[in-house]
Length: 300
Image 1 (cartoon, rainbow, N blue to C red):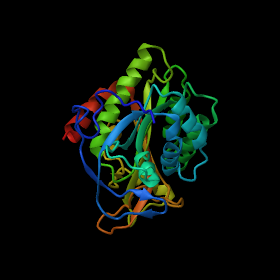
Image 2: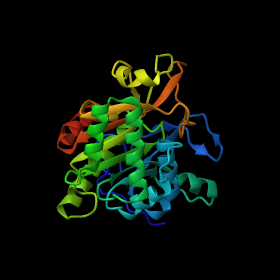
Image 3: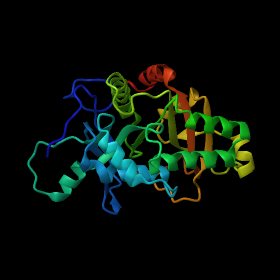
Protein backbone atom coordinates (compact mmCIF):
# COMPACT_ATOMS: atom_id res chain seq x y z
CA UNK A 1 0.00 0.00 0.00
CA UNK A 2 1.65 3.18 -1.11
CA UNK A 3 0.87 6.35 0.80
CA UNK A 4 2.73 9.63 0.56
CA UNK A 5 3.62 11.24 3.87
CA UNK A 6 4.19 14.96 4.19
CA UNK A 7 7.90 15.50 4.73
CA UNK A 8 8.60 17.34 7.96
CA UNK A 9 4.94 17.21 8.97
CA UNK A 10 4.64 16.76 12.73
CA UNK A 11 2.26 14.05 13.79
CA UNK A 12 1.04 15.74 16.96
CA UNK A 13 2.12 18.85 18.76
CA UNK A 14 4.68 21.30 17.46
CA UNK A 15 6.97 20.53 14.50
CA UNK A 16 9.36 17.72 15.39
CA UNK A 17 11.51 15.32 13.39
CA UNK A 18 9.35 12.85 11.47
CA UNK A 19 10.46 9.86 13.54
CA UNK A 20 9.17 11.44 16.77
CA UNK A 21 5.50 10.91 17.52
CA UNK A 22 3.25 11.60 20.46
CA UNK A 23 1.11 8.91 22.01
CA UNK A 24 -2.45 9.81 22.96
CA UNK A 25 -5.44 8.05 24.46
CA UNK A 26 -8.31 7.27 22.07
CA UNK A 27 -11.44 5.20 21.89
CA UNK A 28 -11.25 3.47 18.52
CA UNK A 29 -14.54 2.61 16.83
CA UNK A 30 -14.48 -0.98 15.60
CA UNK A 31 -17.62 -1.90 13.72
CA UNK A 32 -20.60 -1.05 15.91
CA UNK A 33 -18.80 -1.31 19.23
CA UNK A 34 -16.35 1.00 20.90
CA UNK A 35 -13.51 -0.04 23.13
CA UNK A 36 -14.00 2.13 26.21
CA UNK A 37 -10.41 2.03 27.30
CA UNK A 38 -7.29 4.01 26.61
CA UNK A 39 -5.29 2.85 23.63
CA UNK A 40 -1.87 4.18 22.69
CA UNK A 41 -1.89 5.43 19.12
CA UNK A 42 0.82 6.98 16.98
CA UNK A 43 -0.38 9.17 14.13
CA UNK A 44 0.97 9.88 10.67
CA UNK A 45 -0.17 12.55 8.24
CA UNK A 46 -0.58 11.73 4.56
CA UNK A 47 -1.76 13.40 1.40
CA UNK A 48 -5.41 12.71 0.65
CA UNK A 49 -5.97 9.76 -1.70
CA UNK A 50 -8.80 7.64 -3.16
CA UNK A 51 -8.43 5.16 -0.28
CA UNK A 52 -9.62 7.84 2.15
CA UNK A 53 -13.05 8.34 0.54
CA UNK A 54 -15.15 6.53 3.16
CA UNK A 55 -13.30 8.02 6.14
CA UNK A 56 -13.55 11.59 4.86
CA UNK A 57 -17.20 11.22 3.90
CA UNK A 58 -18.03 9.84 7.35
CA UNK A 59 -16.41 12.85 9.02
CA UNK A 60 -18.21 15.27 6.67
CA UNK A 61 -21.53 13.61 7.52
CA UNK A 62 -20.69 14.18 11.19
CA UNK A 63 -20.39 17.90 10.43
CA UNK A 64 -23.43 18.36 8.19
CA UNK A 65 -25.68 15.75 9.83
CA UNK A 66 -29.08 15.78 8.06
CA UNK A 67 -28.46 19.02 6.15
CA UNK A 68 -28.95 18.67 2.37
CA UNK A 69 -25.28 18.70 1.38
CA UNK A 70 -23.90 16.27 -1.22
CA UNK A 71 -21.06 14.90 0.90
CA UNK A 72 -20.21 12.31 -1.78
CA UNK A 73 -19.47 15.04 -4.35
CA UNK A 74 -17.65 17.13 -1.74
CA UNK A 75 -15.43 14.16 -0.83
CA UNK A 76 -14.68 13.54 -4.52
CA UNK A 77 -13.58 17.17 -4.98
CA UNK A 78 -11.30 17.06 -1.92
CA UNK A 79 -9.67 13.89 -3.26
CA UNK A 80 -9.25 15.34 -6.78
CA UNK A 81 -7.52 18.49 -5.48
CA UNK A 82 -5.08 16.55 -3.31
CA UNK A 83 -2.39 19.23 -3.60
CA UNK A 84 -4.41 20.70 -0.73
CA UNK A 85 -5.10 18.90 2.53
CA UNK A 86 -3.96 16.05 4.78
CA UNK A 87 -5.45 13.05 6.53
CA UNK A 88 -4.44 11.54 9.88
CA UNK A 89 -3.98 7.80 10.14
CA UNK A 90 -2.51 5.40 12.63
CA UNK A 91 1.22 5.04 12.12
CA UNK A 92 2.31 1.82 10.42
CA UNK A 93 3.18 -0.86 12.96
CA UNK A 94 6.42 -2.66 12.21
CA UNK A 95 5.34 -6.15 13.31
CA UNK A 96 4.01 -8.35 10.53
CA UNK A 97 0.33 -9.10 10.98
CA UNK A 98 -2.08 -10.96 8.77
CA UNK A 99 -5.08 -9.86 10.82
CA UNK A 100 -7.56 -8.04 8.58
CA UNK A 101 -9.08 -6.20 11.55
CA UNK A 102 -5.69 -4.71 12.41
CA UNK A 103 -5.34 -3.62 8.79
CA UNK A 104 -8.74 -1.94 8.91
CA UNK A 105 -7.89 0.05 12.04
CA UNK A 106 -4.49 0.92 10.56
CA UNK A 107 -6.23 2.42 7.52
CA UNK A 108 -8.89 4.27 9.53
CA UNK A 109 -9.04 8.02 8.87
CA UNK A 110 -8.87 9.68 12.30
CA UNK A 111 -9.16 13.18 10.89
CA UNK A 112 -8.50 15.40 7.90
CA UNK A 113 -8.04 19.02 6.89
CA UNK A 114 -8.70 20.62 3.52
CA UNK A 115 -10.20 23.68 1.85
CA UNK A 116 -13.00 24.06 -0.69
CA UNK A 117 -12.94 27.31 -2.65
CA UNK A 118 -16.68 28.04 -2.85
CA UNK A 119 -16.13 30.77 -5.44
CA UNK A 120 -14.10 28.57 -7.79
CA UNK A 121 -16.53 25.68 -7.30
CA UNK A 122 -19.59 27.82 -7.99
CA UNK A 123 -22.17 25.70 -9.79
CA UNK A 124 -21.18 22.41 -8.17
CA UNK A 125 -24.05 20.99 -6.15
CA UNK A 126 -22.17 20.74 -2.85
CA UNK A 127 -20.81 24.32 -2.98
CA UNK A 128 -24.26 25.75 -3.76
CA UNK A 129 -25.87 23.61 -1.05
CA UNK A 130 -23.36 24.77 1.58
CA UNK A 131 -24.02 28.42 0.70
CA UNK A 132 -27.79 27.84 0.80
CA UNK A 133 -27.49 26.03 4.13
CA UNK A 134 -25.65 28.78 5.98
CA UNK A 135 -27.72 31.57 4.41
CA UNK A 136 -30.98 29.87 5.41
CA UNK A 137 -29.70 29.28 8.97
CA UNK A 138 -28.49 32.89 9.13
CA UNK A 139 -31.95 34.14 8.13
CA UNK A 140 -33.50 32.20 11.02
CA UNK A 141 -31.09 33.37 13.73
CA UNK A 142 -29.68 36.77 12.69
CA UNK A 143 -30.84 40.28 11.94
CA UNK A 144 -31.38 41.24 8.30
CA UNK A 145 -28.18 43.30 7.96
CA UNK A 146 -26.11 40.22 8.94
CA UNK A 147 -27.94 38.12 6.33
CA UNK A 148 -27.22 40.76 3.69
CA UNK A 149 -23.55 40.94 4.69
CA UNK A 150 -23.18 37.15 4.50
CA UNK A 151 -24.96 37.00 1.14
CA UNK A 152 -22.66 39.69 -0.25
CA UNK A 153 -19.51 37.93 1.03
CA UNK A 154 -20.54 34.57 -0.42
CA UNK A 155 -21.41 35.98 -3.84
CA UNK A 156 -18.61 38.48 -4.48
CA UNK A 157 -16.60 36.73 -7.22
CA UNK A 158 -13.72 39.23 -6.83
CA UNK A 159 -13.07 38.09 -3.24
CA UNK A 160 -13.13 34.26 -3.18
CA UNK A 161 -14.27 32.43 -0.05
CA UNK A 162 -12.53 29.20 0.98
CA UNK A 163 -14.34 26.75 3.28
CA UNK A 164 -11.79 25.28 5.70
CA UNK A 165 -12.83 21.75 6.65
CA UNK A 166 -11.03 20.35 9.70
CA UNK A 167 -12.69 17.27 11.15
CA UNK A 168 -11.43 14.56 13.49
CA UNK A 169 -12.56 12.04 16.08
CA UNK A 170 -13.38 13.97 19.25
CA UNK A 171 -10.76 12.14 21.33
CA UNK A 172 -7.89 13.10 19.02
CA UNK A 173 -6.08 15.85 20.97
CA UNK A 174 -6.12 19.44 19.67
CA UNK A 175 -2.30 19.49 19.44
CA UNK A 176 -2.60 17.70 16.11
CA UNK A 177 -4.38 20.77 14.69
CA UNK A 178 -1.25 22.96 14.78
CA UNK A 179 0.87 21.10 12.20
CA UNK A 180 -2.23 20.38 10.11
CA UNK A 181 -3.23 24.05 9.88
CA UNK A 182 0.38 25.08 9.27
CA UNK A 183 0.69 22.57 6.44
CA UNK A 184 -2.64 23.69 4.95
CA UNK A 185 -1.50 27.32 4.90
CA UNK A 186 1.77 26.31 3.18
CA UNK A 187 -0.22 24.39 0.56
CA UNK A 188 -2.65 27.26 -0.01
CA UNK A 189 0.27 29.70 -0.44
CA UNK A 190 1.94 27.33 -2.91
CA UNK A 191 -1.35 26.86 -4.80
CA UNK A 192 -1.65 30.63 -5.13
CA UNK A 193 1.96 30.92 -6.34
CA UNK A 194 1.49 28.21 -8.98
CA UNK A 195 -2.06 29.25 -9.91
CA UNK A 196 -3.56 25.92 -8.83
CA UNK A 197 -7.16 25.49 -7.63
CA UNK A 198 -8.00 26.79 -4.16
CA UNK A 199 -5.05 29.18 -3.98
CA UNK A 200 -6.83 32.50 -4.09
CA UNK A 201 -8.91 33.00 -0.95
CA UNK A 202 -9.82 36.47 0.32
CA UNK A 203 -11.90 35.07 3.18
CA UNK A 204 -12.09 31.75 5.00
CA UNK A 205 -15.38 30.22 6.07
CA UNK A 206 -15.56 27.75 8.96
CA UNK A 207 -18.53 25.74 10.20
CA UNK A 208 -17.57 24.58 13.69
CA UNK A 209 -19.17 21.96 15.90
CA UNK A 210 -19.99 23.82 19.14
CA UNK A 211 -22.03 23.29 22.30
CA UNK A 212 -23.77 25.30 25.00
CA UNK A 213 -25.45 24.13 28.18
CA UNK A 214 -28.89 22.82 27.24
CA UNK A 215 -30.44 24.48 30.30
CA UNK A 216 -29.90 27.96 28.89
CA UNK A 217 -32.74 29.77 27.15
CA UNK A 218 -32.37 29.13 23.44
CA UNK A 219 -35.63 30.09 21.76
CA UNK A 220 -35.33 30.69 18.01
CA UNK A 221 -36.12 34.38 18.28
CA UNK A 222 -33.64 34.95 21.08
CA UNK A 223 -30.87 32.78 19.63
CA UNK A 224 -29.34 35.51 17.48
CA UNK A 225 -29.42 38.13 20.24
CA UNK A 226 -28.35 35.95 23.15
CA UNK A 227 -25.66 33.83 21.55
CA UNK A 228 -22.84 36.22 22.48
CA UNK A 229 -23.67 35.75 26.19
CA UNK A 230 -23.72 31.96 26.05
CA UNK A 231 -20.50 30.15 26.75
CA UNK A 232 -19.61 28.38 23.53
CA UNK A 233 -17.58 25.20 23.76
CA UNK A 234 -15.78 24.12 20.60
CA UNK A 235 -15.43 20.46 19.63
CA UNK A 236 -12.19 21.53 17.91
CA UNK A 237 -10.69 23.75 20.62
CA UNK A 238 -8.38 25.60 18.21
CA UNK A 239 -11.32 27.03 16.26
CA UNK A 240 -12.03 29.45 19.10
CA UNK A 241 -9.09 31.52 17.79
CA UNK A 242 -10.76 31.77 14.38
CA UNK A 243 -13.96 32.80 16.17
CA UNK A 244 -12.16 35.67 17.93
CA UNK A 245 -10.98 37.10 14.59
CA UNK A 246 -14.20 36.51 12.62
CA UNK A 247 -15.81 39.54 10.99
CA UNK A 248 -19.12 37.67 10.85
CA UNK A 249 -20.28 34.84 13.11
CA UNK A 250 -23.49 33.19 14.23
CA UNK A 251 -24.77 29.92 15.72
CA UNK A 252 -27.59 27.63 14.73
CA UNK A 253 -28.98 24.63 16.58
CA UNK A 254 -28.68 21.05 15.31
CA UNK A 255 -30.54 19.64 18.32
CA UNK A 256 -33.19 18.03 16.11
CA UNK A 257 -30.59 16.13 14.09
CA UNK A 258 -28.97 12.98 15.45
CA UNK A 259 -25.60 14.16 16.67
CA UNK A 260 -23.38 11.33 17.80
CA UNK A 261 -19.67 11.93 18.16
CA UNK A 262 -17.23 9.80 16.21
CA UNK A 263 -14.75 8.08 18.47
CA UNK A 264 -16.30 9.05 21.79
CA UNK A 265 -19.05 10.86 23.69
CA UNK A 266 -19.35 14.44 24.94
CA UNK A 267 -19.48 14.71 28.72
CA UNK A 268 -19.10 17.95 30.68
CA UNK A 269 -19.66 16.93 34.30
CA UNK A 270 -22.92 15.29 33.21
CA UNK A 271 -24.41 18.66 32.21
CA UNK A 272 -26.65 18.16 29.16
CA UNK A 273 -25.23 19.96 26.15
CA UNK A 274 -27.08 21.54 23.24
CA UNK A 275 -25.27 20.87 19.92
CA UNK A 276 -24.80 23.85 17.60
CA UNK A 277 -22.95 24.79 14.47
CA UNK A 278 -21.03 28.05 14.54
CA UNK A 279 -20.47 29.78 11.21
CA UNK A 280 -17.52 32.18 10.93
CA UNK A 281 -16.03 34.27 8.14
CA UNK A 282 -12.40 35.22 8.74
CA UNK A 283 -10.33 37.57 6.54
CA UNK A 284 -7.44 35.67 4.94
CA UNK A 285 -5.02 38.48 5.82
CA UNK A 286 -5.63 37.77 9.51
CA UNK A 287 -4.63 34.12 9.31
CA UNK A 288 -1.00 34.67 10.41
CA UNK A 289 -2.16 36.18 13.72
CA UNK A 290 -4.39 33.14 14.25
CA UNK A 291 -1.51 30.78 13.43
CA UNK A 292 0.68 32.54 16.03
CA UNK A 293 -2.04 32.09 18.65
CA UNK A 294 -2.40 28.43 17.72
CA UNK A 295 1.35 28.03 18.22
CA UNK A 296 1.20 29.55 21.70
CA UNK A 297 -1.81 27.48 22.68
CA UNK A 298 -1.03 24.12 21.09
CA UNK A 299 2.76 23.77 21.19
CA UNK A 300 3.80 20.89 23.41
